[in-house]
Image 1 (cartoon, rainbow, N blue to C red):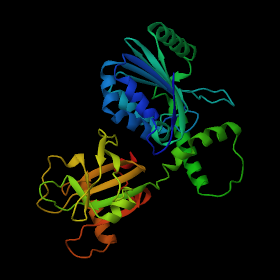
Image 2 (cartoon, rainbow, N blue to C red):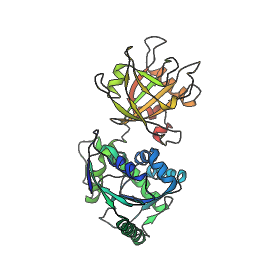
Image 3 (cartoon, rainbow, N blue to C red):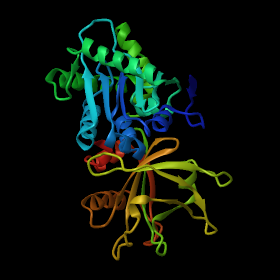
Length: 367
C-alpha cells in the first residue's frame, strides 16, 4: 500500500495525479464520491488520459446529494456521459436523517489485478488537487480484485433503490436545493456571525466543503487582456511584468509552471496546456496559448483573452477574436471603463469573476 498526503501548491502527489497514473491500463472501474462540483468533473473530463480510458473501459460512478452536488455538477456528469457512453454516473438519494453519504473511493481493474484509491478527497477541484487531503493506494492481485469487484456489485445491489438516474425528478429537486444552500453558505461566509446554529450533520458537510464554496464565490481573479501583434508568433501572448507577477504569480528569478484550460463554448474544458513562463529582453513576459495556434492575427482589431484564476497554478481562459459576438461586448466594457495611454496601448485589466459576470453573463465561465 502507498500512502499520500496531498498539500496545496506543492510537488506532493494529489488525487488527480493518482487517478491518471493508474487508469491508463485499466479495463474497468468504479467510484463513489460524497460530493461533486462542476469544476471537479470538468477537470477530470479534460484529462486526455482519463478520456482515453473511457473509450475502452466502463466506469461507473456514484455521487452523493447530501450537500454541494448541485445542478451544475449534475449537468457536467450528464455531459461527460453523453460524450463518453462508457461513463456511467448515478446519484445516491436517501432519506436517512442524521446520516451522510460519505465515501470517497475508486477501484480500477487491470489485467494483472488492479488498485483501490481511498481517501478524503471528493470529485471537486479542491478534492482533486488543491485541498489538504490524504489517500491510500492499494495494489491488488487478480484474486483480490475479483473479490473487490464482487463486493462493489453487491453494494450496488444492496442500494439499488437509492441509486437514481441523473434525470430523476427527486434528485433534480435535491440538486436545486443544494444550489440554494450553497448560495446561503456564500452569504454566510461573508458574515462574521450567524443567527442560528445549523444541524450537526449539515455542519459536518459544510466543514468539509467550505473551500469549494469559497472558490465559487465569484471572487476568483480574472484578467482581461488585449493581445498585441508580435510578429507571426502572437500565440505567445506578451504580458507586462506587473500582470505577470500579480496575476500569474511568476517572479523574474524563478521558473514558473502553470496549467491552462481553454473553456469551450458549452463550458467544458479543453485539453490541459502545461506552460512555462518565458521572459525576454524587451521586458515583456510570455505564455503560449493553445487556442491561438494556426490562427492569423486579425487585419482589423485585436484578439482579447480572458483568464480566470482557479487556483495558484491553474487558469481557465477564453480567446475572443474580433468576429466573435462576445468580443464586441467585452471590448465595449474595456473602452467605456478604462483609459488608454495612447491608441496603441493594449489594456491588461485585473478584476473578479463577479464583475465579468455582469459584463458577460453568458460566458463559458458561468456554464
